[in-house]
Length: 149
Ligand SMILES: [Fe+2]
Ligand SMILES: [Fe+2]
Image (cartoon, rainbow, N blue to C red; front, side, top):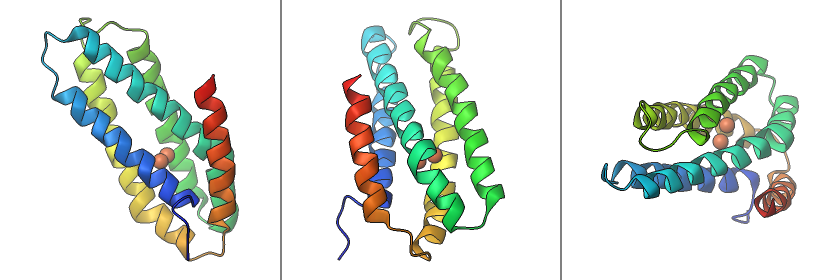
């Protein structure tokens, strides 16, 4: 039986956590600028760690096991575009023009990206004999390291 710490479960859990944080952000009133900034920065931090786990550990293993370079290339381009928005959001204050819009667009881009991972990439991974438990362990330890920084 698969443990819940396999790579796919770990990534899906991250996706769910980030979705909840975006929902929390959406629910905040315009007057809670400090909380907005705090939640948005938490989202940015979580996404930064998540994309790093994928790019350093998960994606290279998947690229090798699943022969679909186009799919993996697209995912990397989507990460790069998310990173640009993340940097902008981190350098802004919550009452800056376009702050909410940037968080909203980031949430839409992430939602699209997550759907491609969960509906296209992960099913392909499940059909291979990729050792998702070992990958999950590697990812967990990198995640712990990155969250300590
Ligand atoms: Fe991703
Ligand atoms: Fe992901």
